[in-house]
Amino acid sequence: EVQLVESGGGLVQPGGSLRLSCAASGFTFSTYNMKWVRQAPGKGLEWISHIGNSGSPTYYADSVKGRFTVSRDNAKNSMYLQMRNLRDEDTAVYFCARDSGQGGAMDYWGQGTLVTVSS
Amino acid sequence: QSALTQPASVSGSPGQSITISCTGTSSDVGAYNYVSWYQQHPGNAPKLIIYTVTNRPSGVPDRFSASKSGNTASLTITGLQAEDEADYYCFSYRSGNTLVFGGGTKVTVL
Image (spheres, each protein chain N blue to C red):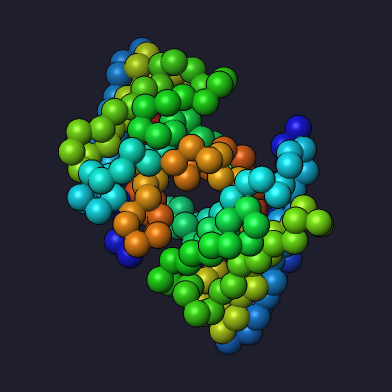
C-alpha cells in the first residue's frame, strides 16, 4: 500500500525556518518524481515545488522561490522541504504528493502537516 | 503566477449532470494535455479523479468525465450523488516549468 506521511509542521515566528519531511512507503520511491502542495486555511490548493526522481530537476512557485528548498534522500525513502524566512502567508497545510508520471498528475497524497507562521 | 479560472460554486440535484470549467491560457491548458482534476472533501487530502485531460484512474466512477477545448478544460459529473459534494480543482503544467491549480469549485448537491 502506498503511503506518504508528512511531519515537521508547527508554530514558527515570522522570519524563522522549518524543515518538513515526507516519508514514503509501499512503492519504489527512487523511480518517482515528487511534489509539495500547500493549502492555506479556508483557501485553495497551491503547487509549490517539484523534484525529479534522482533529486533534479527542482522547480518552485514564484511565491517560495529563493526561500524554500526541496531535496530527497532515496536511501531513506524521504523528501524534504527546507523553509526559510517564513512569512505569515506561508501558514498552510503542506501536502507531499507522488507524481504519477502521467502529465504531472499526483496520484497519492499524504495527510498533510500544518505550518503556522505567527508571532 | 495566476491561477486557472474556475467557478466558485456549482450545484445540482441528485441524478442531474453538472459541468465545471477551468479556463487557462495558451501557455498552460491550451498548450499541453497535462490537465488533471482533484476532488477534496473537507478535512481530507485531495484525490486524483482525472489525469491527462480525459483519463480516469482505476476506482474512479465513470460518472466523472472530462474534456478540453482550446484554453478551457471541463469536468462533468453525470448522475450527481450526495457523496460528490466536495471541492474540485483543476491542475495544469504551464510553460516555464511551473504548475498551477485552479481556484477551486465547491459542488453542492441540493
